[in-house]
Length: 538
Image (tube, rainbow, N blue to C red; front, side, top):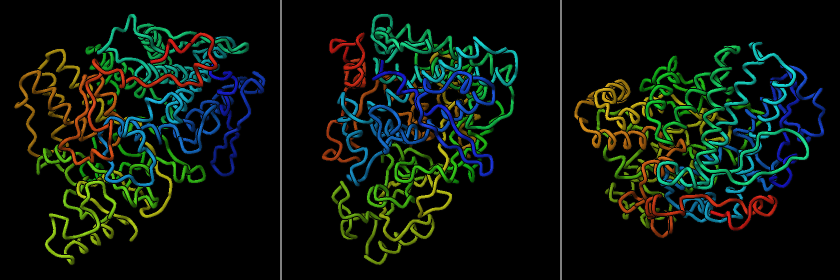
């Protein structure tokens, strides 16, 4: 399967150089490493797990069909928000992710991003299978060190299948999960690496739920030392909450989200506005802690999202928030400082046609005012003189060392998301008071005048929660799957996005009526898997 699964299982072992706290991927296939080597001890299996932690954000060119420019979640997080319309590109930039936002990438079975995402997820599954089956055969799972390894393996497998089935199949809440085709379920280890047909969406979810429950069971028994690059029991509860929310299991989603956020207090204003560049932030439950020697350079998360990163994608293409979305942020909500609505439009090729000339910029009366505003932004945020600015540009994501190509952490899960999952689930159960209570705790941490009592119907609550997710989680990769869960289409008419630039990504009918929301199965998978044919293509 997947062009021979033994190739996909490359890079699961790390050679650890203890003298300099750097992890180096060994790209030898796992089937070329004896079980007595890779899976003989807790220490060695932890090295295998470290390979998965690194693969979450690292270069994907070790995978079949992979590219040095596709760096795990560093790429896929901003990609999902480009396709989902929450990150708005202000210009064509240097072309990276243009196919994503134009809906050309995920609808093309031969595209690099689509293909690599599929294989990266199955790489996680294959390695997790090895760990789970090795522990089952050779180890005592009651040993806390082994339990922690086993729990993380189950959690990674659950996460990978969930990411696959929510992307390459029709959404659970908008389709017919008992008959809709999902993705192949592979659980075995070792030669002959046989393949499988597509299971139904319901069958895949059943496997995910079994795996995440096992993950929580073992992580509860495991070593409790907390490295946020590892999957903790809180992170596993967070995955469970996400899975339950995506299938409309509201009670489970609310309970798991409440458990996941325990011990991860909400950020204050200074923390929230500090740049989202460190897993050390109090809200971060799970994230990729970067090592300087392992930088992704021009394929890093901050290359795609941060206005201060010194790359052509950022200098010419500041990422902006929807004008409609931003203009609804109250003046008492400090998150309004994370975007700059009156930043001068300095790039001559800006897609709104108003860039590079103060006379075309409605916010400034003179050239001097216009230039002074740009200079003030450059100085305040540490950009270079070559960086351009644009109205509604984001300054939510800021480098620790601005104006460089230095590495910064990638955040996968925050407690803020868990508050919003809990609130949405309670609203969907028509627990108005319960949803209001959760929202009050969350919202008052962001807005000094916040009052959740005004949202006193299910409809009002859901409208507000949708708005909160779009603001709070902007740039963190949620909008595409949120739109599917809510069965909402795309309409960028009043957002500030350019219809000429966005093309098919400017408007799309809602997912229940529009199969373009389902990513194509990679052509490489259809060609290699005897159990999947062209007739199985989405």
